Length: 188
Image 1 (tube, rainbow, N blue to C red):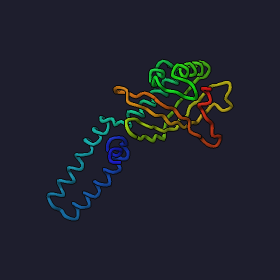
Image 2: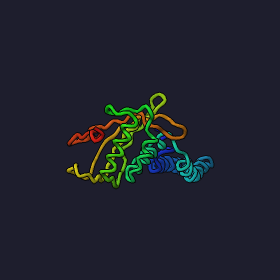
Image 3: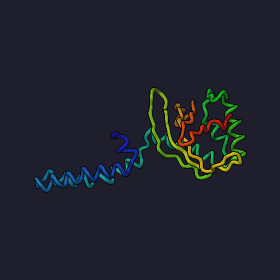
Image 4: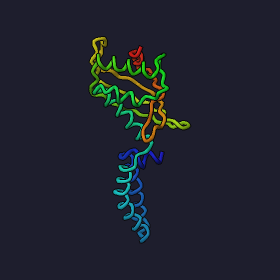
């Protein structure tokens, strides 16, 4: 939780800083000692330093989220080669191996247009030596086979480290109400 506050969420960091700073000011107004005065000034000096550190430091969770966002950007421009390079060679989804998945993605992205892809609601965990990330994706999908063009989907990706990036080892489409659509049906 502390890592999330310090490095991953600037609004939460500022809220926590305000609470602590108000506590220091309250303590100073009650005690009026030189030590509490310095603590108040140290608190004011700490905010810019905390903001710079929060902006500069990228955690593993932020890196995994950026990886997923880059995949969404690639889907918008139909960059299948970019997506294929991020799939693990041993990946298997719905009976398709790596090459079969890439062929299906290439076929689907040649027929449809993905626009305004937005990822949110990330839940990132790091069991063992890999990363499991769940998120909600919304996008405008132009497809003659779809009744609704605004598509809301939920995903679980299992990633393993690959240098300073990630490789996708598993993709699961999670149910999204009220229709409980399985987006991976498009690969079949």
